[in-house]
Length: 209
Length: 267
Image 1: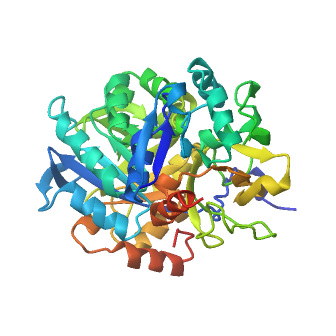
Image 2: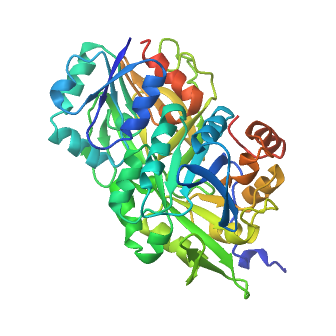
Image 3: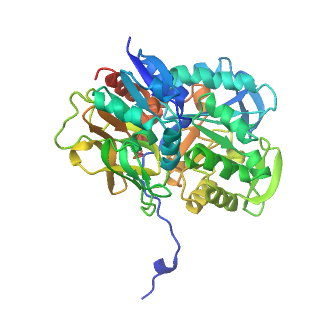
C-alpha cells in the first residue's frame, strides 16, 4: 500500500483530501511537524487561503526546508491550490511574499475586469494539454484533454518557463497554468479531491509516479 | 440621430462561463426533508447520505446541505452527515443553517464542508461575513439570502427559515454582502420555493446584475427549462431540490437537456 504524507499547517481541507487519497487506496499520514515530513515517499502540500498566511504557517513550523529537501530527493511532491501556488518563487497576494521556489515563477491576481467572469473563480473548467502533449508519466497521464476540474481561486500561477506549465485553463481571455510540473514536483490549481471521478483518477496517477 | 442605447445602463451577462448543477438537501435531525416556501417540512424515506451518494454518482457538480430547523441543539447529527459525505462524495460541499459564531463555522468546516452558508446570523450581526471571509477566504463564505417580494414590487430579506421579516432590501443586502467579503450568494426565492413551477427570474436578474460574485439560484426549479431560464437571467448555478429527491428529475438527463438548450455545463 502506498503511503501519502499530507502536510498539516493549519490551512487546508485536510479531511477531504485525506478521504480522497484513502478512496484510491492509499494510506494517509498527516505531518504536523517538520520531522514528520522527512523520509516521505509521496508528499502532498494542500491549502486553502492566502499566500502570505500559508508561507507564514510553513515558516513558523520550520517546514520550508524539509519540503525543499523532499523535492531534492526526487520523490513525488504534489501541491494543491494554495499548496501549488506556494511551490512558486514569489506570491503577489496582499504584498510580495517569497514562496518555496521549487518552480520558478510568480503568483498573480486574476483580472477583475473581464465581463462575465467573476473573482473568486469558483467553477468547473476544462484543462488543456500544452501543444507538446507531454502528459505521459505525469499526474495527468490518464486524463483526457479538455476534462473539467473544479477551481476555487483568486490568484493564478505564472511559471517563468513554459515547459513547467503542465496544463492550461481559461479565465475569459486569460490563459493560465491549471497545473504545473518540474521534474518530481507537480501542482494543480484546481482541487482534484473535489473534481469527482476525474480528480480521483489524478490522485491515483500521482501514486504511480 | 435617435438612439437610446447610449443612455441605457445594461450589463451583459456573458453566457460563456460554465453553469453548475447543485443539489440542495434540507436536513432535519438525521433526515432529508422538503417543504413548500421553507415550511411544512415532510420527511423523505432515506438518509441524506444515500441521496447525496446517488447524486454524486449521477454527476452532480456540487452539494448544499441546509439545516432546515437551524437548531441550537442536535448539531451532532448534522456533523455526522457531513463526515459521512466526505467518505464517498468528491465534489464541493456547502453547509448552512444555524451557524451563529466563527466557532460554529470552524466545526462545520472541520467536519468536511468546503464552504459555509450564513443567513440569519448575517442579518443579526453582519460582521460575521467579514470574520468568516478573512479567516477562511471569500470563497468559503456563502451569503444565504431568503427573499420575498413585497406588494410594491421590491424584495425584502427574511430570516430564521423564512419566519422573520426585515426591512432590508435584498439588492442592497447582496451588495453589502459582497463588500463585506462574501464569495457567493445563495439566493432563495421564498414565494417560488417547493412549487417546481419555475424560479423567481426577476429576483435572480436584479441580484446578479447588482453583484459581481456568483449567484446560486434556489427555489422552484422543476425542469431543464426552469434551469435555463434562471441561467439566462444571470444565475451562475442553480440549486435543485424537490424534483431530484422525488425522482422527477435525473441529473444525467437534466444535463443532457441543458446541453441541448445551449447551457455550458460539465459533461
